[in-house]
Image 1: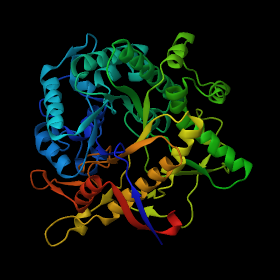
Image 2 (image 1 turned 45 degrees about the vertical axis):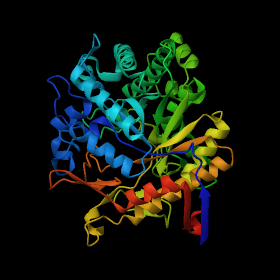
Image 3 (image 1 turned 45 degrees about the horizontal axis):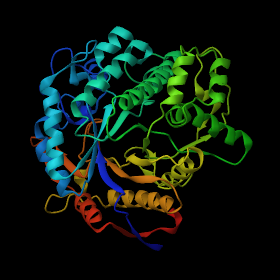
Image 4 (image 1 turned 90 degrees about the vertical axis):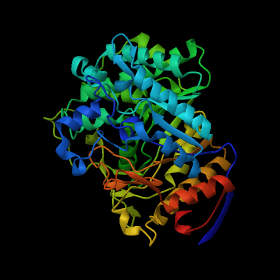
Length: 475
């Protein structure tokens, strides 16, 4: 056991994150303003834990003043959320703003400023308008790219004077991977071509929004929130190392490289061609991606990804899937969050930090999501009814430790944001696993209550010092 005591620089973010669809609820939503998540919930409510979904979420749209006050009380200095594209406009083709919803965003930003909390806004967090999915097959269409840029322009025009930290997407690889590659979410269509077309059009959309942001002369920075999985091979054997390289290529570098380097990895293009994955892209689009890289990236980090070489051949009669090149591997003796089935390995922060330092020009970046979801947290309430989530405190401080250690070694890590500020609904799992500093009581009019971690986070923010005993096995 070793005693850790590290100063947290004043410019190191200590914040929290959420999204519009996971917090706001449907109050005031107009006919035709369904998002992809809303449609999924309406078609497939039975797959959402206990039937909870985005309909009510945490009712943030009506309770934001109360929640912003709780942010202040909990030491949250920055708050990252999204604008719900499907609700911001009433006409997606013409870019007509819904003044009622825009007024809510205005009021939220004013309240955050009043409380001294800096907003960081994402333009799309799985909130593709359902209209665009049904009419254009979503991100399969170049028309949707242009409509996203129109939407971004309207947002910048409206809020550019109040927000200086902008992001195009949150986890742009996720929806199409779950829907079109793995076919495990509605509408359950396995189509590798569609998967890669969505990837490309989201990369193109980021570049075009970056271009728009700069042409408009907007103040501040424009980036993207990515979720690369820090990937480790089972062994040092060449076949296992190769499996890890290919997993990284298909799931991580497919967005990291265009956003930061302005290009796709050459090997990715070769493999797509080899497996007859057809993507509609042009030289002009590639030039747009090349010339409009992001200012910064947020990196969502939860668990490591471990792979080994495949022990069997992929079925030749099925559509191409990158899993022909790897299999998942579980490390014996690993630390686990058994509520989620995820390995706990805080060193992923350090390893990602050094990779961004050494391979991606040491671009400014921050941990945009990191957190621990636990089932049945009411088990940990004390006599006063407060959840004693020491496990969450330990999880947070170990990940911050590795971020600060990497920063000491020259990594350009700008901060840490917890997922999430309050407990909130997640795809399918709904409120099954609780992530928040603040408890949401679903049985009592969704009352809020600080957990032990909220008091600890405030003390950390005020002292700017990380002090704890670290198990030497985790150093």
